[in-house]
Image (cartoon, rainbow, N blue to C red):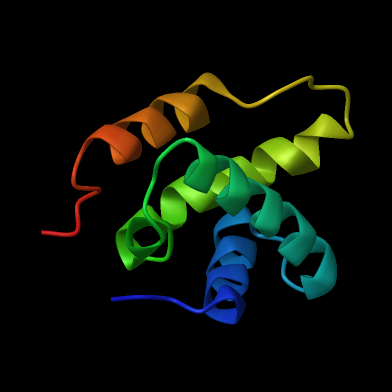
Amino acid sequence: MQLTSDEQITQIKQALGIGDGIPNATINVWLTDVKDYMLNAGVPNSVINAQTTIGTLTRGVADCWNYGAGNTGWSTLFTQRVAQLALGNGGTT
């Protein structure tokens, strides 16, 4: 199942437990960065927007969110998952 950006934002906010605490527009900025990173790493759009990838998108958005708190990069979990998605079928079969 493919998700729209709005659906992804809703699920990311639910997963992070932030509700309306952070505006959708802010989450969308981070989500766009995460998707761009994944696309440039070789993950196809069909995988990036798949329901099965929402955990990876959430981790990437959380990494962007935590960057402002002093963390300095992508988490190991995020980068390893992106590599798996770029090399494999992304769980879409």
